[in-house]
Length: 302
Ligand SMILES: [Ca+2]
Image (cartoon, rainbow, N blue to C red; front, side, top):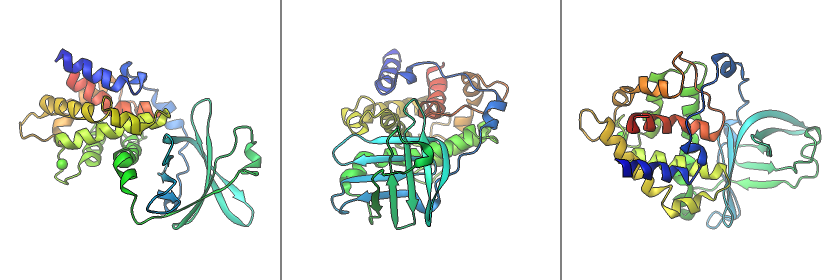
């Protein structure tokens, strides 16, 4: 157990030091509910976009309700999770949807378009908000029938988890979050086979996706992290097997919502939310804390 425990912490820690630290204390309920809801990216603009030929694109852009991830074919992936959003008028043209990332850099990206064509602009940090997009070069994106195999192999699970993360944040950190709803959302998001149970492979897939998102959020080249194995493939399977052995009370080799929920008291205490406060899920690390804490508190007994 000690060896596995070290391996788990090391595997996650190599991606983000934040993971090896105790979970941040939950914010008071008033602070969590006082935050204004983000204006989501219009549904027509979400999904996968490409620059260049569909068989060999120069870059892929994945747009979710509250994030954008740019995947150049020859450079590290870059994830911008929005902490702030707004609409900006563009004269006679469609309004821009402006997404602003967190952190000191607070990267901005402007999006507009429809279901078949997207334009983006990533203005220089010095450009004033009221001047956007100014003379920032616009980039055009189009749809492809399916992502090229190389992109899908490297980024597919990470992109899937990015979408799941937003669902989990809403279910586990939203105003109406509850432990039961949170556990149900984890099962729903993780269940690939549709049996409403989580297998080792399904848990490992979520852990790999989580690892990818953390790496992309830190410009740490998720493809490199995944290929190295330490924080990706091997750790994913190790954590998943450990989760199964620890939580599969009826021994059927699958985890049900009831089995996951069995430990929700420990889960809640580990987050310091004994008063039933909503989780504070502001950054990627904090969002992923949900899954990590569930695994840590139930598997490692922390
Ligand atoms: Ca399943």
